[in-house]
Structure formats: structure tokens, C-alpha cells
Length: 142
Image (cartoon, rainbow, N blue to C red; front, side, top):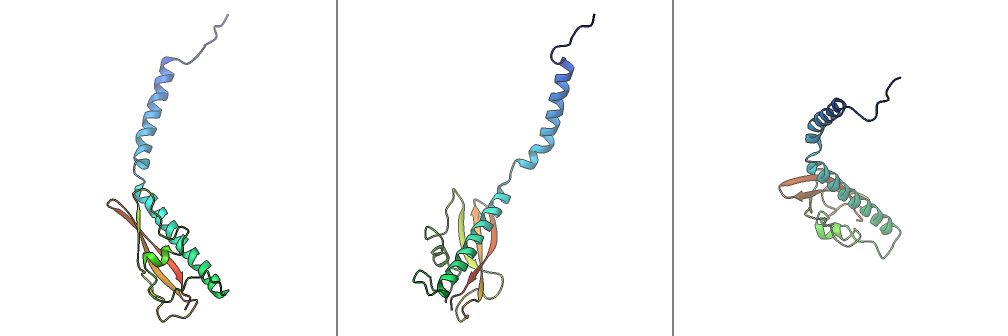
């Protein structure tokens, strides 16, 4: 008559623990610090929100809505762009601060531009000593 084995042997358990230890040693450094990637993604999200809000504002301007904001001067300013967003200002999430500056492509202002011209602004997200930038497209209202 044959005996039936119940459970795992000690060597099987040790092998599984060693394999899990090796996997953890290889994979853990990859996931320890994702601060830069998270900051880059959140900054791109804010830039996208500003671009979308600007496009909606331009649509409202073209429809002669009283709710449209005139964008015909220096637009790469926190107060101007923040005013287009829900809440009326750039977001403040935890310890991340967002600032607005002139973009890297021309034009960087709506002064003297015709309605529909797209200006470029740089959005910078900063958390401690880490920072990330993204470009926002702002549609001038003329």
C-alpha cells in the first residue's frame, strides 16, 4: 500500500522562498522611485487640461458667448491660464506646484495675433528638487 503525501516538503518551501527573494531583488529597484515619471505625467495632464480649456474658450468666443475670456495679450501667465480651468487657478496637489512660462515655439503670446492663432506656453511641475515640463497650446481669441 502506498502512502499519500500531504502538504509541501521543507525543500519545496525553501526553493519557493529563494525564488521569491531573487524576483524581489531584481524587480524592487525598478519600482522604488517613480517620482519623476509621476511628476512628468501629472505635468502633461495639467498642460492638456489648459490646452482643452483654451480650445473650449475659443469655441465660446466664436459663438459670441459672454462666458468667453479674451486671450489677446500675454497669455503665458498663471492667472490667465488658471482662470480658464475649473476652480479658477492652476491645481495644487500635495507638494507639487505648477508654474507657467513662455513656450519653446513661436508665438508665445497672443499680442498682435489673429483669432485662432495657437500660442505655446510651458507648464513646469515642481516637487522638491524634481521638476518636469510640458507644452500647452493656447488658442488666441484675437
